[in-house]
Image (tube, rainbow, N blue to C red; front, side, top):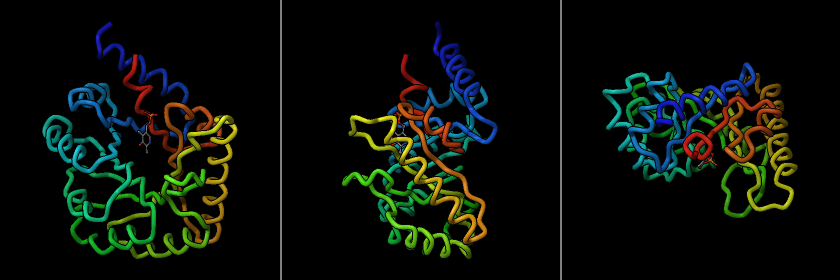
Length: 225
Ligand SMILES: *Cc1c(COP(=O)(O)O)cnc(C)c1O
């Protein structure tokens, strides 16, 4: 089977699993621009990268061939890379706004954007030491408040990752996703916002879909045989 047939089969299989308010983000990190283009030509538009430099390279390689692509930054973002990130053509969203310091730097640089960009506040629901993200409701609430006059930076929602190192993988993933939904519901009702969730990767996306995730981020399962 050729690559295109393989990708077409994967895409239709995953689309059949999505509920009506769920969307697929194809995570193309460590994959070639040609592979991104193959999915683009099958009609897919949303792609995620976790490193600014790799994102810049692919975005410029694909600028002509994929004019409607929407790039999502999903990895740990250092504030000294913001200017580079903001110059990426077709940058659509940043899923990994992990703390107040980074948010303030993003806000300070927002005039450099030529078009609106959606932000997801990352929440550390697993509490694993190496994971980043907001840890309390009050920090999240203040961050959400500060985006009310965010200009081209628009608060789109909340992002999290399930616990990786655990014997109770499924139960822990469900707990993390449920915790994110609690934060989302509270922010929506207290601040009058409409928020999406970005949760679920290849290993735990089925659990995330059961928890009504709006964006599942799939890398491995979209590219591996
Ligand atoms: C790599 C990555 C993914 C995709 O992970 P897979 O297990 O390959 O599906 C999703 N989200 C983030 C933040 C990632 O870094």
